[in-house]
Amino acid sequence: MKPPVILEVCANSITSALAAQEGGAFRVELCENLYEGGTTPSHGEIVVARKHLQIKLYVLIRPRGGDFLYTDLEFDIMAADVQFCIEAGCDGIVIGMLNADGSIDKERCVKLVQMAKQAGVGVTFHRAFDMCSDMHQGLEDIIAMGCERVLTSGGKSTAMEGSGIIAGLISKAAGRITIMPGSGINENNAAGLVHLTGAVEIHSSARIRVQSKMVYKNDHAAMGNNYGDEYSYDVTDTERVKNIIKQANG
Image (cartoon, rainbow, N blue to C red; front, side, top):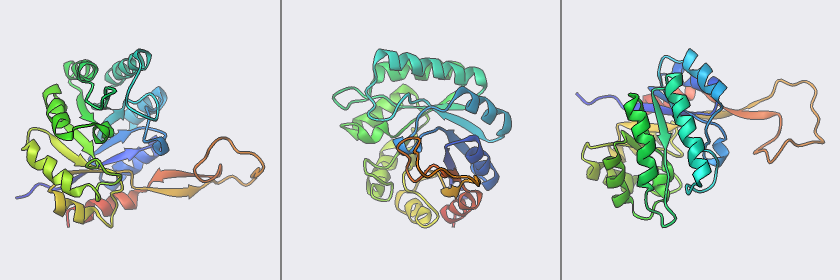
Protein backbone atom coordinates (compact mmCIF):
# COMPACT_ATOMS: atom_id res chain seq x y z
CA MET A 1 0.00 0.00 0.00
CA LYS A 2 1.32 3.42 -0.95
CA PRO A 3 2.25 5.52 2.12
CA PRO A 4 0.36 8.79 2.58
CA VAL A 5 1.90 12.01 1.34
CA ILE A 6 2.92 14.07 4.35
CA LEU A 7 2.85 17.84 4.69
CA GLU A 8 5.52 20.00 6.29
CA VAL A 9 4.21 23.46 7.10
CA CYS A 10 6.48 26.48 6.91
CA ALA A 11 5.23 28.25 10.04
CA ASN A 12 6.08 31.91 10.60
CA SER A 13 5.02 31.91 14.27
CA ILE A 14 3.93 29.71 17.15
CA THR A 15 0.34 30.53 16.18
CA SER A 16 0.98 29.20 12.68
CA ALA A 17 2.76 26.14 14.06
CA LEU A 18 -0.20 25.25 16.27
CA ALA A 19 -2.59 25.74 13.35
CA ALA A 20 -0.41 23.37 11.31
CA GLN A 21 -0.53 20.78 14.07
CA GLU A 22 -4.29 21.06 14.39
CA GLY A 23 -4.68 20.66 10.64
CA GLY A 24 -2.73 17.41 10.57
CA ALA A 25 0.71 18.50 9.42
CA PHE A 26 3.45 15.97 10.05
CA ARG A 27 6.19 18.51 10.71
CA VAL A 28 6.74 22.23 11.13
CA GLU A 29 9.60 24.28 9.75
CA LEU A 30 9.62 27.23 12.15
CA CYS A 31 10.93 30.51 10.78
CA GLU A 32 10.09 34.20 10.50
CA ASN A 33 10.23 36.86 7.77
CA LEU A 34 8.65 34.73 5.06
CA TYR A 35 8.73 37.67 2.66
CA GLU A 36 12.53 37.42 2.76
CA GLY A 37 12.38 33.69 2.15
CA GLY A 38 12.52 32.97 5.88
CA THR A 39 15.05 33.64 8.63
CA THR A 40 15.80 32.08 12.01
CA PRO A 41 13.05 32.65 14.60
CA SER A 42 13.80 34.05 18.05
CA HIS A 43 14.97 31.76 20.83
CA GLY A 44 11.74 32.54 22.67
CA GLU A 45 9.67 31.42 19.70
CA ILE A 46 11.61 28.17 19.51
CA VAL A 47 11.24 27.44 23.23
CA VAL A 48 7.50 28.10 23.27
CA ALA A 49 6.98 26.10 20.07
CA ARG A 50 8.82 23.12 21.55
CA LYS A 51 6.66 23.35 24.67
CA HIS A 52 3.37 23.26 22.76
CA LEU A 53 4.04 21.08 19.72
CA GLN A 54 3.66 17.33 19.67
CA ILE A 55 4.57 17.06 15.97
CA LYS A 56 8.13 17.31 14.73
CA LEU A 57 9.77 20.72 15.02
CA TYR A 58 12.50 21.76 12.60
CA VAL A 59 13.99 25.25 12.78
CA LEU A 60 15.34 27.32 9.91
CA ILE A 61 18.96 28.35 10.41
CA ARG A 62 19.36 31.45 8.27
CA PRO A 63 20.70 34.68 9.80
CA ARG A 64 19.43 37.05 7.10
CA GLY A 65 17.61 37.31 3.79
CA GLY A 66 19.40 37.65 0.48
CA ASP A 67 21.97 35.23 -0.89
CA PHE A 68 23.42 32.12 0.76
CA LEU A 69 27.06 33.24 0.79
CA TYR A 70 27.84 33.88 4.43
CA THR A 71 30.66 35.62 6.28
CA ASP A 72 32.55 33.95 9.12
CA LEU A 73 30.58 36.01 11.63
CA GLU A 74 27.30 34.90 10.08
CA PHE A 75 28.45 31.29 10.22
CA ASP A 76 29.26 31.72 13.91
CA ILE A 77 25.67 32.90 14.43
CA MET A 78 24.35 29.87 12.57
CA ALA A 79 26.46 27.48 14.63
CA ALA A 80 25.25 29.14 17.85
CA ASP A 81 21.64 28.83 16.69
CA VAL A 82 22.13 25.15 15.86
CA GLN A 83 23.51 24.57 19.35
CA PHE A 84 20.52 26.35 20.86
CA CYS A 85 18.10 24.21 18.83
CA ILE A 86 19.85 21.07 20.06
CA GLU A 87 19.60 22.20 23.67
CA ALA A 88 15.96 23.24 23.21
CA GLY A 89 15.03 19.73 22.10
CA CYS A 90 14.19 20.45 18.47
CA ASP A 91 13.80 17.48 16.15
CA GLY A 92 15.76 19.02 13.32
CA ILE A 93 17.36 22.01 11.66
CA VAL A 94 17.09 23.43 8.14
CA ILE A 95 20.31 24.74 6.60
CA GLY A 96 21.91 25.76 3.31
CA MET A 97 25.10 27.55 2.31
CA LEU A 98 26.74 28.20 -1.05
CA ASN A 99 30.17 29.21 -2.25
CA ALA A 100 30.61 32.28 -4.47
CA ASP A 101 30.75 30.05 -7.58
CA GLY A 102 27.33 28.60 -6.80
CA SER A 103 28.59 25.25 -5.52
CA ILE A 104 27.44 23.84 -2.19
CA ASP A 105 29.58 25.08 0.72
CA LYS A 106 30.34 21.53 1.81
CA GLU A 107 33.00 22.41 4.37
CA ARG A 108 30.80 24.60 6.54
CA CYS A 109 27.55 22.70 5.91
CA VAL A 110 29.22 19.51 7.12
CA LYS A 111 30.15 21.22 10.39
CA LEU A 112 26.50 22.03 11.10
CA VAL A 113 25.30 18.60 9.97
CA GLN A 114 27.81 16.92 12.27
CA MET A 115 26.72 19.07 15.22
CA ALA A 116 23.12 18.06 14.62
CA LYS A 117 23.67 14.37 13.92
CA GLN A 118 25.87 13.89 16.97
CA ALA A 119 22.91 15.10 19.02
CA GLY A 120 20.39 12.94 17.17
CA VAL A 121 18.90 15.97 15.39
CA GLY A 122 17.77 15.73 11.75
CA VAL A 123 18.86 18.02 8.91
CA THR A 124 17.02 19.37 5.87
CA PHE A 125 18.87 21.28 3.15
CA HIS A 126 16.70 24.23 2.12
CA ARG A 127 16.11 26.11 -1.13
CA ALA A 128 19.67 27.40 -1.32
CA PHE A 129 19.79 24.24 -3.42
CA ASP A 130 17.61 25.99 -6.03
CA MET A 131 20.25 28.69 -6.38
CA CYS A 132 23.25 26.39 -6.85
CA SER A 133 25.11 26.26 -10.16
CA ASP A 134 24.80 22.48 -10.72
CA MET A 135 21.79 20.81 -9.13
CA HIS A 136 22.90 17.27 -9.97
CA GLN A 137 26.32 17.73 -8.37
CA GLY A 138 24.68 19.67 -5.55
CA LEU A 139 22.35 16.77 -4.84
CA GLU A 140 25.27 14.35 -4.59
CA ASP A 141 27.10 16.75 -2.25
CA ILE A 142 24.05 17.05 0.01
CA ILE A 143 23.57 13.29 0.11
CA ALA A 144 27.24 12.82 1.02
CA MET A 145 26.86 15.34 3.85
CA GLY A 146 24.19 13.20 5.48
CA CYS A 147 21.12 15.40 5.10
CA GLU A 148 17.72 13.70 5.31
CA ARG A 149 15.96 15.72 2.64
CA VAL A 150 16.20 18.59 0.20
CA LEU A 151 13.53 21.29 -0.04
CA THR A 152 13.32 22.41 -3.65
CA SER A 153 11.21 24.11 -6.29
CA GLY A 154 13.30 22.51 -9.02
CA GLY A 155 15.32 25.67 -9.51
CA LYS A 156 12.23 27.64 -10.50
CA SER A 157 10.11 30.22 -8.68
CA THR A 158 7.41 27.65 -7.85
CA ALA A 159 7.36 23.88 -7.47
CA MET A 160 4.78 23.52 -10.23
CA GLU A 161 7.08 25.34 -12.66
CA GLY A 162 9.93 23.05 -11.63
CA SER A 163 7.86 19.86 -11.42
CA GLY A 164 9.69 18.15 -14.29
CA ILE A 165 13.07 18.85 -12.72
CA ILE A 166 11.79 17.72 -9.31
CA ALA A 167 10.62 14.43 -10.84
CA GLY A 168 14.12 13.98 -12.28
CA LEU A 169 15.74 14.71 -8.93
CA ILE A 170 13.51 12.16 -7.20
CA SER A 171 14.54 9.59 -9.78
CA LYS A 172 18.21 10.47 -9.43
CA ALA A 173 18.02 10.35 -5.62
CA ALA A 174 16.72 6.76 -5.87
CA GLY A 175 15.68 6.68 -2.23
CA ARG A 176 19.03 7.93 -0.89
CA ILE A 177 17.45 11.18 0.26
CA THR A 178 13.93 12.64 0.29
CA ILE A 179 13.19 15.32 -2.29
CA MET A 180 10.50 17.60 -0.84
CA PRO A 181 8.84 20.05 -3.27
CA GLY A 182 8.04 23.49 -1.89
CA SER A 183 7.07 27.00 -3.06
CA GLY A 184 3.58 27.91 -4.17
CA ILE A 185 1.98 24.60 -3.17
CA ASN A 186 -1.68 24.91 -2.18
CA GLU A 187 -4.94 22.97 -2.13
CA ASN A 188 -5.47 23.66 -5.84
CA ASN A 189 -2.22 22.17 -7.14
CA ALA A 190 -1.07 19.67 -4.49
CA ALA A 191 -2.67 16.67 -6.19
CA GLY A 192 -1.24 17.58 -9.58
CA LEU A 193 2.23 18.16 -8.18
CA VAL A 194 2.28 14.82 -6.39
CA HIS A 195 1.09 13.10 -9.56
CA LEU A 196 3.73 14.81 -11.72
CA THR A 197 6.66 14.27 -9.38
CA GLY A 198 5.94 11.21 -7.25
CA ALA A 199 6.82 13.21 -4.14
CA VAL A 200 6.01 11.66 -0.75
CA GLU A 201 6.57 14.88 1.23
CA ILE A 202 5.44 18.39 0.32
CA HIS A 203 6.00 21.80 1.89
CA SER A 204 3.59 24.74 2.17
CA SER A 205 2.94 27.73 4.42
CA ALA A 206 -0.85 27.30 3.96
CA ARG A 207 -1.24 30.88 5.10
CA ILE A 208 -3.95 33.49 4.91
CA ARG A 209 -3.95 37.25 5.54
CA VAL A 210 -5.82 38.25 8.69
CA GLN A 211 -6.86 41.67 9.88
CA SER A 212 -5.75 43.26 13.14
CA LYS A 213 -8.26 43.56 15.98
CA MET A 214 -7.03 47.05 16.76
CA VAL A 215 -9.87 49.56 17.08
CA TYR A 216 -7.68 52.66 16.93
CA LYS A 217 -5.54 52.85 13.79
CA ASN A 218 -2.92 55.47 12.93
CA ASP A 219 -2.83 55.59 9.14
CA HIS A 220 -0.15 58.30 9.05
CA ALA A 221 2.85 56.20 10.11
CA ALA A 222 4.44 53.04 8.75
CA MET A 223 6.64 50.73 10.82
CA GLY A 224 8.73 49.54 7.87
CA ASN A 225 8.43 48.19 4.38
CA ASN A 226 5.34 46.19 5.23
CA TYR A 227 3.88 43.88 2.59
CA GLY A 228 0.34 45.17 3.03
CA ASP A 229 -0.21 47.42 6.01
CA GLU A 230 0.46 47.65 9.74
CA TYR A 231 -2.95 46.24 10.55
CA SER A 232 -2.84 42.86 8.88
CA TYR A 233 -0.52 39.86 9.02
CA ASP A 234 -0.08 36.34 7.66
CA VAL A 235 -0.83 33.16 9.61
CA THR A 236 -1.17 29.48 8.72
CA ASP A 237 -4.79 28.41 8.35
CA THR A 238 -5.89 25.07 9.82
CA GLU A 239 -8.49 24.43 7.13
CA ARG A 240 -5.99 25.09 4.35
CA VAL A 241 -3.62 22.59 5.97
CA LYS A 242 -6.38 19.97 6.07
CA ASN A 243 -7.34 20.64 2.45
CA ILE A 244 -3.78 20.44 1.15
CA ILE A 245 -3.25 17.09 2.87
CA LYS A 246 -6.58 15.82 1.55
CA GLN A 247 -5.85 16.89 -2.01
CA ALA A 248 -2.29 15.53 -1.95
CA ASN A 249 -3.67 12.13 -0.94
CA GLY A 250 -6.72 12.20 -3.20
